[in-house]
Image (cartoon, rainbow, N blue to C red; front, top):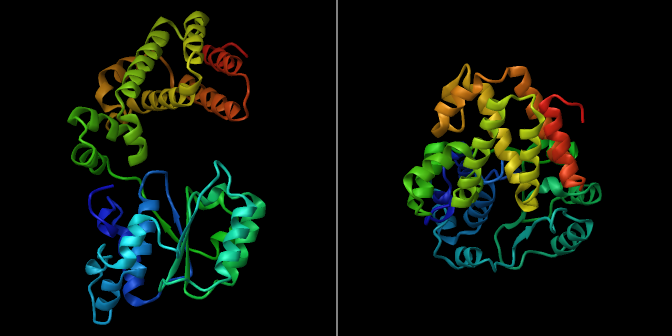
Length: 343
């Protein structure tokens, strides 16, 4: 996330980093760790920093004497550190979905690799990103490694939440939760690292739900322009009268023109509807803080019951589209439900 390396590169995750540093200092590393949290909060970056710290020669020498937790980090200069930074250390193994599933063949290949001794590392580290993408067969195969961990091998799994994984996998890992990042931290990264203009950085940082990945995607001027259009379109529909079908159908038609942007657009709609629900009673907690005046005015034109029904309709459409349903029919059904007409 920053120009720093190792644990110093992690933004806003004090508790997870402190815990990992303590485990390294005390020599009490579990054979398997599970990092959970939303996408873009630092899980993958932390996994790589952890792999470096476990194999850094400079840190290994320093640990021969008492070391404060804050001083525990990889040097970034020794041979193992440079190999890990360069992505060519033979004992740092990374597994990720291909493209949306971690298949049994990937886990079988891992098991064959782990049957051999590490090539050169003090601690071989296996990082399984988005472990929730394992199918049942690959998840059950991974259990063999977790039940009988190979010597000098550490497993790091990342996932959104524990409920996405087999309970038997979760029970065999030390669980560390990563919280959403503070908007101020994200704003600072966008300005200082990504050279984003301050107002855009502030707007996106408040919207992204604590995910630097989403923030970097949404800071695109095209995304910001689309958000503005959707806000104006929804405000117009609600001002016209939420039971009038024509404005809703027009919205569906325009959304359907860009299939590649539909999921993104529905996400923006959900955020706006959520803010309309919150704005009545807790305006300090809205995400679209830069449009608070519009939120306050529009919130008076629709009831909480209607807003909840709208959110349900959008959620249903998003789930339907994941099953490759017809795009226009799905969007038409969504807006007809929102207008009060049974689709």
